[in-house]
Image (cartoon, rainbow, N blue to C red; front, side, top):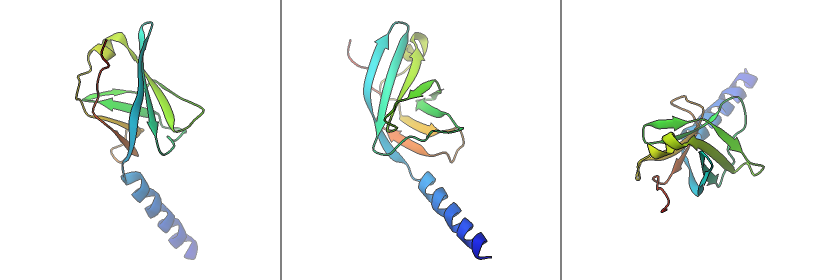
Length: 115
């Protein structure tokens, strides 16, 4: 019974940590060939595992990414059409997976860099 209580307590702790949103910021938006790279940085590490990191900008979601050696940084890749469809001021966030209760990083509103 004591083991069950300990497991339940750990589960509640993990759930409460995952329910809290942490912040991240855009550190780089760069056009390379036919691809746009959006790099994000957070004070906490982005998890590595079975779930993909998902970048949400407005109503769109993007999963193509690469984590860097510094686990507090991640780069997302968008093709030219995806990038062109983004709107300045759209809400941004990153989630670990697609679930409604997935860990979330809140990012300031999307801003396209000046040409």
